[in-house]
View (cartoon, rainbow, N blue to C red):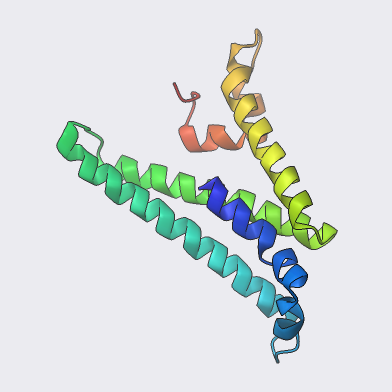
Length: 149
């Protein structure tokens, strides 16, 4: 999920600027906010479609003794889609501020990796207060009250 959303978010503006196609798009009678809205909508559609496909593949996996209720699968798929949209929007923000696809990919990937490490390793620290640290971990909100095994 993050590969698709962060990759698209990091290249949707700066990639078109480097290719020279953003100038053509910007000359259309569309407000710049409208162009940005369309990029965000495309990012959202990509994340939702991928999450839905993942959910369908998991439902098919139920034939292989995978017993998960569909309501739980839908919740997990929603969480995955929201995680991808969050990091994709962060990539668009960094890209729009720096104008560089590479910087957007690097910064967003580093924040995603740091967030994953934090949500995975922080509970191992003595005195870790899960409730106090929850807002700082994106993975914690998708996986619930405990990190994935």
